[in-house]
Image (cartoon, rainbow, N blue to C red; front, side, top):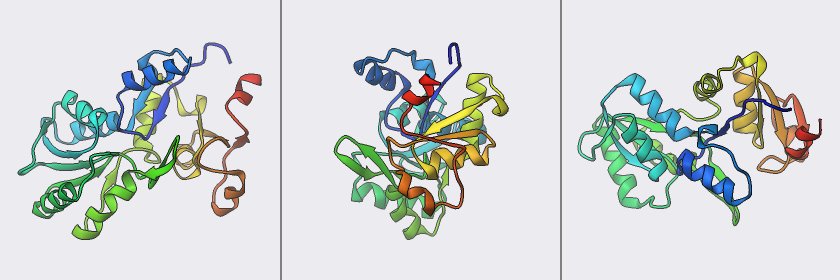
Length: 222
């Protein structure tokens, strides 16, 4: 397992790679911030490829807004090209209402990831898919989600690693994002049972991971 390239590919859009690097460092794990790639970065890169120099109305934390700024986008709450939604603790009725009106006026609807829930130390919390639902229901628009399981973010990660899909493996704790992302991108999959998906949940899915392990420590042992 020595000298393997790796990247932490997260659907979370709240934090920047530097913040994620610092969080792991506090846990005693030291890796460079170049080893992190977020759905916010993937979303910003996608929008830049679609409409360079465009404008957005964003509902999200600093990880998302900074990624959009760095990609050349401006914030616009009057007539933006896109309404972009990510995880946010500042999600309010007024912001939902404003986003709905902008989409009705013609702004295109983008989500950083389709996750309905996300894990925290205190338990599950609503994630982007859940926060997006009122906007979709009120406008009839369907958001385009850039994060896992979209193969787009998987290709971004492979490019950052300078790696072919045949030589890669995705290790994750969610069947509905991590594992299906690997399957749809034709990348070997490993499900770890220390997160969202439990072993008893496997029978609910029409697809299976390539491998199932108790925790990531098992990988280092083999």
